[in-house]
Length: 378
Image (cartoon, rainbow, N blue to C red):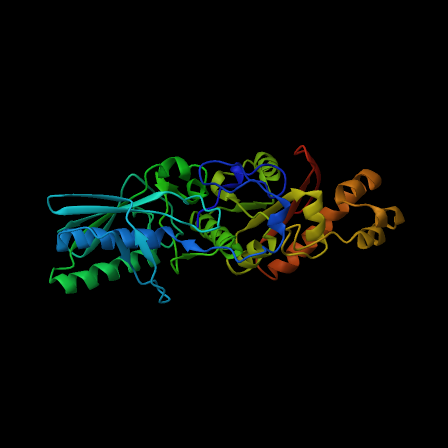
């Protein structure tokens, strides 16, 4: 699944810019357990595989079907309606409109087109309009290749091999995947930071999009670390939102690919860095989320961790802080002593999460306007 980049997030917590099929505007209901089970959807890779199958049936069988059924890696057999068909001499193409279910995936509603052409040697993948190319090391696909991940490639390869056996054809096929409008959408995702240029990625491990998947976000953080390491980037930063990200990037002059879209998943980032170290990491955020980090929270989301005001009062020996409602209110009462203490204790927690990894860590705490109010670090 392809999330919006940190630059597209509104500065306040968990509100995202609305655009064509982007994350929806935040509502408090998003922090609650839904009353009904959220509807799952299908990955770009699953849609591309279905499109390849439909196009091959036309190329080798002579006619398009109204819909097409594929088998996913875990045995599910979804059926997809065709939204686009075309054919010519020695080629055919089909398109599937992606349905991401109830997940606010950037590619929900996009048309995923596969053109197949007989010839060449083996199965060759090409990037059509709207599909990116890999330009940096560290990703599962090497530089110079279309941004079509290994699992979708294997799914499409299996379809080609099965249909080649069914129709008595050699499995020598060129597959070109296109996503109309994909280049514009990709500019608002993490792809540019990862060195994926010209369009979106064709993703998916299981073929299924699971709504509001934290694991997908954390996987994207991991890929950002992988790219930074492959590019020998000495300093990376993980921030909780757009405002803190802008402040940290401006402070240190970091390149875009060094800015990891950590969001609330401080633990997910730091656990990965403990095993895949970078020389230095900066963690940045507002005083509320940095307070939760200082108090040991790994997930900084408002629905999954809370500030302990009694602990704040004990730390500063100020009983007034037991009766405040927010960390910002505590800051207004206690003054600069509070963010300075929070920065130091947050860094202590970061060191705990990094274990013995050879990573220097520092903390940057900002106010709502993006001004730096405290730092702690090397």
